[in-house]
Length: 389
Length: 213
Image 1 (tube, rainbow over the protein chains, first blue to last red):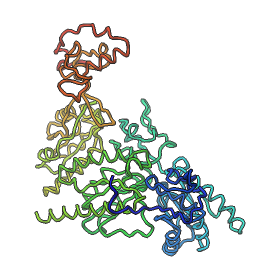
Image 2 (image 1 turned 120 degrees about the vertical axis):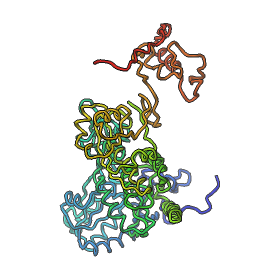
Image 3 (image 1 turned 120 degrees about the horizontal axis):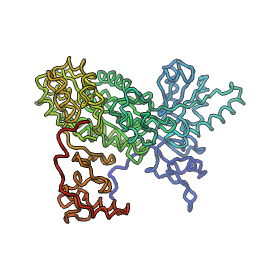
Image 4 (image 1 turned 90 degrees about the horizontal axis):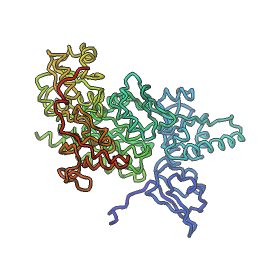
């Protein structure tokens, strides 16, 4: 294989000069991307295996790992900015995968005014951030992590729990109130409406976790302990009987309705899997582009794609993980299949070029930008063609 | 299940070109995937987009019925909604479309799908194949649960034709030879002696056009 002309920029880098080969990173890495070389005793990074969870970054005692997303500097800058913006002294750090809306946070922590901080995994928040936040005058830190067996980064959620116990003990010695940092767990799951269910069994086939069971008599039953909230069953349900908490159909529709008019043509709406690309904390998208984050590309719904077109969006881009990278047991492959089917139908009205499915990964941050750039060109070309008619 | 495929949108647009208020009726019955509320809504959205390109504003309402082929159910579930519509697009198989046309003779009912056969889906590949030809004289007990009428290209009743090659049909190398499958299954069950039983030519009258319950 020939080398690509330009080397892809990776989101994670190991600085060998600082590395003391202590092996904390390799023992934490859920993906065996960091390994100790048995011969040299040095730590090696295989970026192709890395899922950019950041556990290594936040736990490296020698600061030998550089990461593009949510590093110490950008987190501190965000906190400084957000403290003013939200005018609150309560910080709520949430894993994107389990973050409910404001009302949900209020229900869980009993706070209505707070500084939200959404990260791909709370396990990646370095200790320094907790301490810096307290130094900044934040009086209370609430952490919302996924249930341990629901964590898409394998150990992220349990690392958080241990970290918070240790920090609370330490802070207690300094005179802070008990549990200045509070950890709670929350996971977003499927909700079935038995009145709409037609007992077709599609969800039983599609669920990557065998959480759906169809009984006769008895109808559909979800084992919520097994459900990991990918949303594939919701997007595939022929009877529209399922919803995914926090990603309800109406909520996504409302988002499209709000975003479409504020965009400038050519309008490109990106449905992105929250694991396929990590937005930067100071992300400011171009006026042509808006993003809707989904728990997994599997939650992409034909309804919402068509609705976007109906509301004047010129192009819809689906940014998914590759099947191999998918945090939801290869659910993204099923979505690619159904997008191909939708594309075939769109081709009957000449819309096929306006829908584009791509696989990207946060390990190469430029991947999505490149896809977006290329797609923008396609959409612009369609616009020109149409205005010449 | 009854296997259907969506009709091309252009064909549907030609049916409905002269109407504005159209009811799209899904069917939760036997098709795979079921063409229920999701397909009804999706079709409505696609046609609305297509209409805009033709400078035509349609007003679609969508609903679904448990079984469009049940005239009693169809009448009770759809009557109030159909009365407001100028035309109906049915997402049922050909049977459901005809039932609606019978129950609501004053409203034009158009099929949104083509109906193929009674079959089953290999869900992994999204492929659907015919399994039952509705012959009226089921002989699956003698053929290891594999129907030679529906699954042998030639519908042979007494063993393979001689054109079977490596388990595939001589007429279509992608298609499994039904008699090979029958042989393998009977062998597994140690029932190969069943192949010696002679099946007389099919009585086509048994398929019939009407049965009484």
